[in-house]
Image (tube, rainbow, N blue to C red; front, side, top):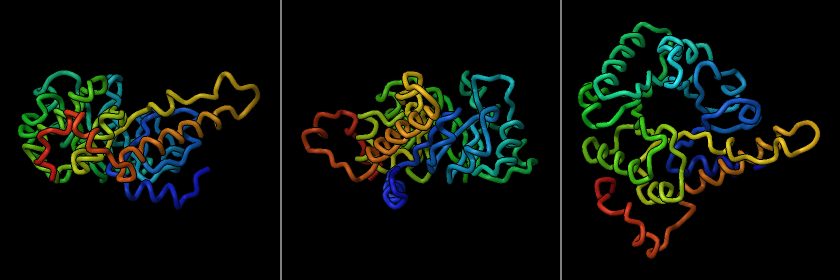
Length: 254
């Protein structure tokens, strides 16, 4: 187990908040500062093993409503609730989020809102009225390339600057994205992913009980490594930066 002081050092110095968006046995055995789950998978043990808890909207489950998300966020005292993520077009996204604002205004949950935008992200944000005080998420790029994700971030930041909180839905900190974050620490504020649980080893191939504890520790190792990759503890060489085309044209973040 990593001593708390060393985990805290990474957490305090990382450029992003890195959310574990997974459920089941292993995540409930891991203390991790940031966790995200949809309503049907949200439990008190996840809430109690993190510092900042986000209730996701579960866009692939049509039976989950905005009320479900806000009810769950209120019941578990989550810090953030995500409004409905609509995998359609800009107009449908804007209509859904505007409806979500009205529901939120009359709801007992008084935490922060995370607003999932769809491409074109800049136009979507403008049509929402550039809502102040909310977290903004780039949606629809969970299966996108690193280039597409970085381009979306660059376009949004070029238009609105670095004051708006920007989240990447389903973005794991791959090698190139982590390098982009290290060299542009104000570009992205948070990411969420389930990769550490999906990639964790030591489950079915282990005999006996408490196998999930091994899976949990393997997932924890990757979480720590990925958070470190998005921190100033790694310095990129000049040769690496020259070879990484994603670093061009980023003066807006300086």
